[in-house]
Length: 289
Image (cartoon, rainbow, N blue to C red; front, side, top):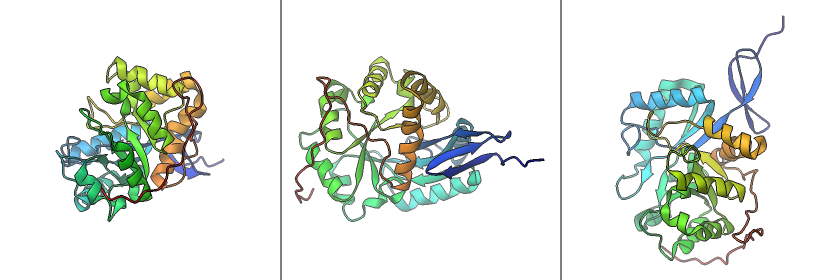
């Protein structure tokens, strides 16, 4: 009698592959933006809630999660405490899911100063990718220079949930400019489901059509209103935009960011006039924040 593979997952040729109880293989997912660690921000309130969120992720087929607490004016980012909370949660859930840390990096003066001596303190899995969040009330005219300065530190920047930011929705050319500058775009799975309103949903659909999206993530904060779920959104992307794109946005690119590798899927987005946007290398300027 042939022995069937044990239920679980492994990485094969850079692809996360799961094995069910019947021995069949299926593709799994990686979440690079999640507020799963307890009592650090407005995410999980307790370790028990964190465990519930991890169990939800496992049931969805998520194998890797980057815990990304806020680093902004409302929540102080304490790297050592973040690592401690990650270790506590990993001990509770075992090896059924792999946890790493990063942060939801708010683009403010204090953070821009603090990141200079130790960029990996804030980056995903302490490697090269950094989630960058913009304020809802203002985007300064110097933002392109600030992004450039972060890139000079060796960081690859991921703009988080721009579809939920009204200022970016009204000025989509700015997002296209950041992509041309070398930034990547992460949208929220719940936005595609309409949970963040029609405007956010329409922007995700439009940007998928224009090849402007590089990642989906949960941005989960709890188990009910903002859950750690990706599968429903992946199913929609698979049906409307194809299996290959779904794999790129939910698995291949997120895993590459988790491991600090170049993204395998880096499309050239369509510009507002329907042409192909050009990625222009920027002149290096060494200016302190």
